[in-house]
Image (cartoon, rainbow, N blue to C red):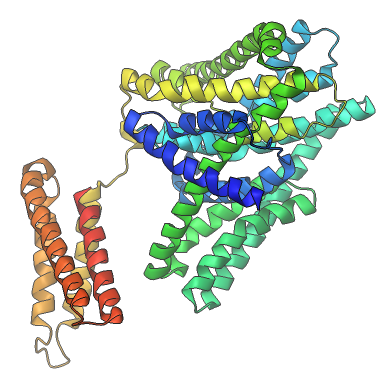
Length: 524
């Protein structure tokens, strides 16, 4: 009962902290972290102890699935080399740099333990990245690089971490075995994800009930992750692959009603999960601080080494990103023009966007008792999470505004939103024209034909002249929204007066809701 009450209190705190962050224009992740720390140190509350494996299993699969579901696969394929460079190359390079710095600071700490620290703090986190990227506007290439990296780099960090644990336990390390293991984990994860994704597509084609379809989509990420981990391949890559497949086919296998209801369900679920993760990160700090003797001991004995590791972590990402960009520039100078460099401003933003979160926390907490340097690794991991969210997460928006990034011409979509609407309206008009007349050539759907002709003409006139028509459209749809509100008020009056029953109320209210959502979508 106490645990349930604690969960309810945390939910109330999440709502309050999100509201406070919105009013104060602060990143919600920062407010939730601070709230979690306050929650942990409130007198009378039990210390929160997290099972790291359980944390990963509960939170990581659905959050990875949600990110992969909505990612632009065409742009992902186009920038796959850059994403792999960040997700694998940057993680390995950062792990090496952090291991070197840690060993220089603590020469008695085994190399495997130093490598474990590097593997724990090196991969930027998908959940933290989402929390930051939702608040900023980036060019499509930069956004895809960051989203793709955050989805795939956890596998690299996990492989390095596991080999560090094995090395500490056995005292032996094989580079060839590490590379082979990484290949098996990655390819095996992709195969498992493809199987689960294909099974979901076949299943939802046969499920007639929309609630069963939504429930199946909820189970899919855990099925992919758990099956991947059970057969000892990458559950992360399996889940991401499943998300790619489900996101690609959902447009043709799900009905409009399932999409609307399912997306609403997923939006609330992901909101609560992301918020809970940041609260739990803050809440779990108490046990770690108490274990090492309090904040005074942390600052006195570990403050400077942790600061140096943070600097090494940040500089390593800058070196990798700018080094990769320089390599592309040299390649173009030698005639290899397939890839385009980011440029200094984009490279700065990409380098600064490495925020850590739940994976770093879970890996640090999973270190076995007696692991060399465990206390320092735990405190350093927490410090990296707090520092990257506090400093990089809060300053990234300002850095992007300073950089004044623009979408390169070759990255822009061939059609604008308005041009795509014209093409869609013309396709609809052609279909209506083909069925507006009977076999004798007599017009049988005059009003329908007139409606779609008027729509196609209006959209064609609007395309390319958006700024000219914007004030008229705002005024037009303002009246539409007011009319919807008036209809809803009258509907409620009729229901309260007993003139209509509940079923009529809900049916007509649903029509008004869809009309309002459609209007707001057009206005945005």
